[in-house]
Length: 54
Image 1 (cartoon, helix red, strand yellow):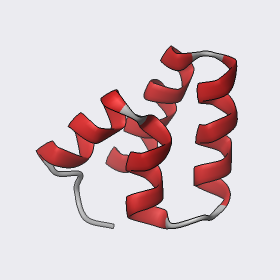
Image 2: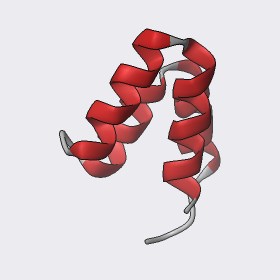
Image 3: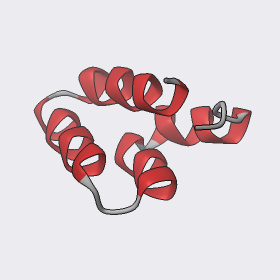
């Protein structure tokens, strides 16, 4: 995987599921991020940034 770009990180902060969707599509990562964002916005952001930068 390539490193996350600045735009990817900004999108992940504003709309975490969208940032993950643009990178991975509608896979497991997206659904985990969506659930975490619905449960709490901050966990969704943390997970999105983690997934995009790993």
